[in-house]
Image 1 (cartoon, rainbow, N blue to C red):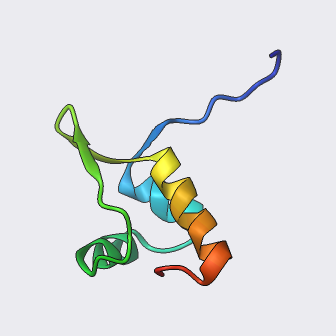
Image 2: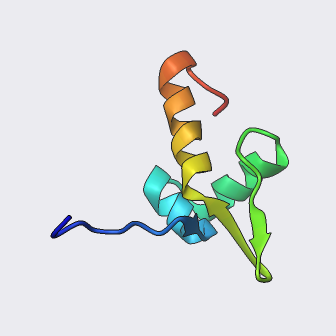
Length: 67
């Protein structure tokens, strides 16, 4: 696997917002509204699992999703 780039498995709100092309406040507003996956606490840090974000985006493409 030469040249493989490892992606972080846990993402902060700024990283999630950047991936989705929205402001971090949008992420938090949608979490409060129940329209976005809730974050987890890891070692006192609020993060999202990359897989949860990827699954959320995939669901958007399938049915117009929860966004």
